[in-house]
Length: 193
Figure 1 (cartoon, rainbow, N blue to C red):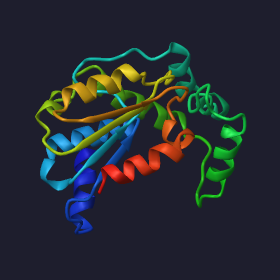
Figure 2: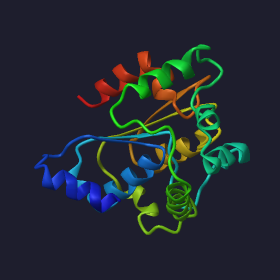
Figure 3: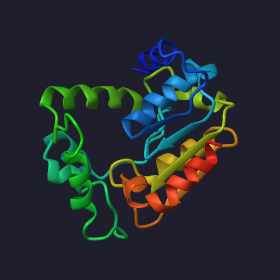
Figure 4: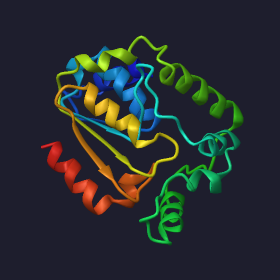
């Protein structure tokens, strides 16, 4: 997937674009940065985990939510205690407006995603240790109440990547960047300048 992303950047003729990856996308982004470091100018890794074998363990119930594919269980992972009561409904309303919106995926897709994540999270992907060699500016961020990829993962990534910038949001979970958009979006834009 990292090579596919790099191929897309080349095919589109982009010159050192910025890259952001959330959750599994953050794992793919880390692999891409290791494999193709000259392709990206700056990167943001959001609510993700390292691939070097270190893992702050997820809540078993959160993992269960992923495997069932139940949309309401998945949505329960996104917002923390500081989110307004309407956060989930507002998020779903926004998603439903998008062309081609699908509320869940097939069991086969979930199984493939879980298998790919297991290799990365277990430190069995050759790119996992490579983030310590990165020299580009990287922003690492997460929610302190993330049950799926706990904040300890982002702390480890930020400590491993030289000069990484780290930010955490109390009262936020896996979807911290949606819940805390008023603070995070401007922060991200400043970082990308």
